[in-house]
Amino acid sequence: MWSAQSALGSTAARSRVLQHAYYSTSITHNDRSYITDFVHEMNRENARLFSTTLTPPVDMSAESRKEQSDEILVDDSDSSIQELDVPVLEFETGKPSTKMCQLDEDIFHVPVRVDILHRVVRWQLARRQQGTHKTKTRSEVRGGGRKPWQQKGSGRARQGTIRAVQWRGGGVVHGPVVRSHAHSLQKRVRRLGLKCAVSAKLQEGRLIVVDTLDPSDCKTSFLQERVDALLGDAAQRRSALFVDAEEISDNLFMGTRNIPWVDVIPIRGLNVYSILQRDYLIMSTDAVTAFVERMKKPIRPSSATP
Image (cartoon, rainbow, N blue to C red; front, side, top):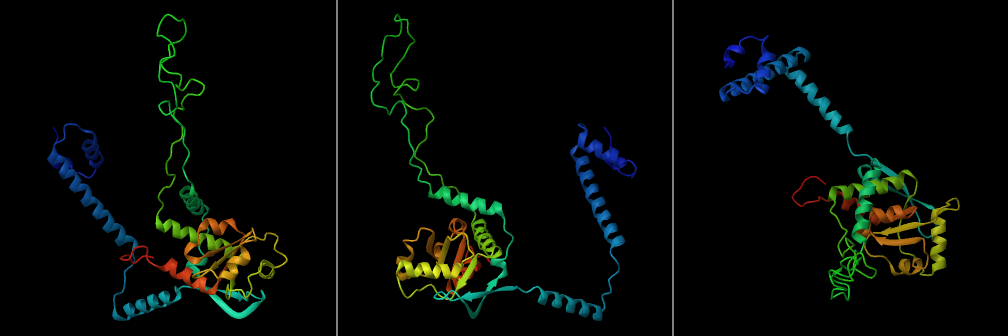
């Protein structure tokens, strides 16, 4: 049996010692501990030499520390959250007003990830699926209580019931059962999916901000004219999703319920599938404010991360 203390005394024999440490079956527990301590010590020494060689000497005088702190403060001031200015349109006329809506860049200008959108839409549709599909097994099909013929002597194949799976009118093997298709998805992923959806609409120029969503008339023709004025004549795809802050006004609900390509939803029901299903996303200023508050609200009350 070889000794680890004597072998580690030579630097040239390091590879041979490590080879023995990992592949030798005659090594003792003390030798393994000694080799482990040696390897850790060599790693610390290499790290110290590496940092000393590549890191230039730092002047730790008072003036240099003050200059460095000033530079850090300047960098922090430049990294403030930027906002996007979007013109606010008048709902009654469809023309731009004098107001501008400031959109948070961290919410309305994030990279559009198709994989996140796919996961959130799949999660929504899976929860929507009823799961009431059901087939009957051989024990649930009516009839087939007696043996159709005797076991032997008939010349035919032996059978125990006429409701077996190989019989016409028999049961179904491995068929669908009543179950829930819902699966879990992290709240952070769901929130990121909403950010990607509204960011995609803004990048495509299909996000419209209006001053209010409370029309003065509840006629369908009146709402049809308002929608045409907001979307413009150049819009080839006409479907739209209206999003208001709290409750949907009665005039807006009754005026748009006969328009098949227009949906109305409050801000608390805004979801990724509804946004992607329609071409244009029309939000009121109150809805934008409520949506930003919803996105910045912590997922957990005790968590500082939004």
